[in-house]
Length: 143
Length: 246
Image (cartoon, rainbow over all chains, first blue to last red):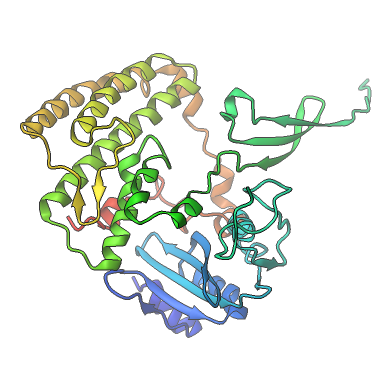
């Protein structure tokens, strides 16, 4: 059986590189405009499970993290996409992959990243009257 | 003759104080008479901002909080954090400590499964298995407390190892427990999966439509091929991603 890594390379020309040791997963850095497209292509290559979707708050902006799994070949891939610190926006994965729905809502709630095209982008964990996005580094306590 | 009665839609909050939701979850239900026609889940009642707490603490100070993420599996929550820090720092863990960690995690896993098995019986109106499961769980909690000093909030794993070595004579105690527990398994079988009520409420309830539903396969986290095999595809992190190094 050919691995999903090979299929992604042959079918879509997506070059997956290994993570730095001791991690065994694969990874790819993409432009934020191409993140959703890449995830969908990887799904067709066999990474059919969206295990995790989250973000990182860095000094100079944000980074989206998509973690996709193939349970049959036991492969795992991380898709990283950088976003600017001011007004971070990215296309939503939800219309094409509904498993991303609540995950994107959580990232919106915690980091304030706006997912364009999400059908119901509301806060999911914090109360409705909450202001700010708690996992941003510049967030200060509300109390 | 069928009479048409006009009904108004009614919005009802199910939870968070309803006993079935344990105070952590609310479902906004839309009712048409007695039929539920809509449901909007509202969550976050138990979100404690653990990540934000972690930002204020040193790395060692955060370990006790991990036991409280999920109180039935403290060791299993401590491990990924401790292991991640070790990987970042390039710390090599002594083989004895690795074995102790795996032993503790496996004990913890059995204890957590006992809660699951017992509670499933409880939810299907079979009270006895819960009592039996908690009896065995108590045995395990005592074993874990002997090592770590606490029944559920262990605070035992450390970067590069564990807090204490195993007490003297511990392995023979473990051996006794394993034999004891093995003999209890037929009891669970007779109470649960050979129980007629339990079978009637669990057997043949798989949604067979999902098997041929491309949308379910594509959109939700069903792996390709899951429904085409005889049973659900087996996924075991312990075997597939042997992160403990053993």
